[in-house]
Each structure stands twice: as structure tokens, then as C-alpha cells.
Length: 160
Ligand SMILES: [Zn+2]
Image (cartoon, rainbow, N blue to C red; front, side, top):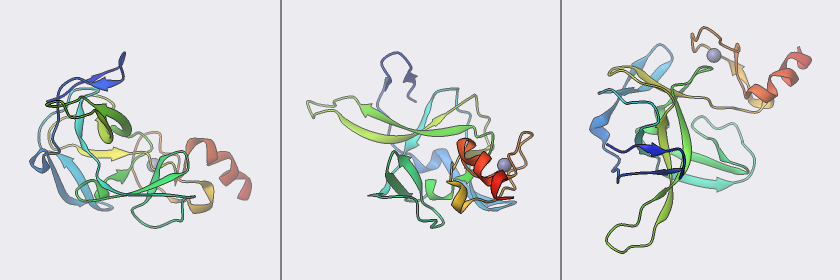
């Protein structure tokens, strides 16, 4: 168990991505990632591994913007994270503490945005550009209707 320290913006104990902490199951919109135990708000769920490449979003199924100008295609299990307009998780870059004298390194981690119950589906906000928006079926109370970044929603409405 590791907790994210909002002041230092580092997580405070070492964390290994443990696949037994999440499970990939079928959801109403295809495969989804589910918690198999509770996660407190701000806790680190696991490290995201995968391929990072630079350039604009190209609309491939499992790719999304990892940070400004960089796209990420995550490996399993996190490639199956579904979008929600009210997500319970987010990705963030954290510094791993140095272990046994090894230099600290930076990694991309999945963090809980609120308390998460066991067996809840884990979701993130894909924040896709309007050009790649597709109708959203996340079933959140405040669903935007489209899988699209909040700041791109206006563009979509203008396109009609
Ligand atoms: Zn939605």
C-alpha cells in the first residue's frame, strides 16, 4: 500500500504493480478493469507500463494523451481502463523513491481520485480531442454525452 503525498507530490512507500489488485472483466462496454479490494482516496493503484510515443493523438483504440504531446499505449491490465465522464482514477507522473541507493526515477501511475470500493470498475477520463470524439456510454450522472475532453466539448457542439 502506498499513499500519494499531495505536498511533496510523491508517493510515500514503494509500490509494485500487482495484477492481483485489479481484475479485467467484461463490462457493459467491453472489457474493463475492476478493483479487487478497496482503495482509499489518493492511493496508488499501480504503475502504468506501455509504449509512449510523441505526437498528436491518432485515434487508435487504446491510446490516450499521457502528457502534453505524448501518447501512451498501456500494457495489460491498464489498457482496458474504460472512460468515464466522472472517473474514479487518473494517471499521474510520480517520482519513485530511491531504493537501495538506486537513483529515483519517474513513472506513470494510476491513482484513486476518491475512495474506491472492492469490485468497482476503475475508470479514467480519456480527454480525447473533439476530432476523435465518439458517443459516450459511461452512464455517469453528469455524462458529457461524448468521449471528449471537457475543454473540447464546445467545439463538438459547434460542429453540431
Ligand atoms: Zn460519459
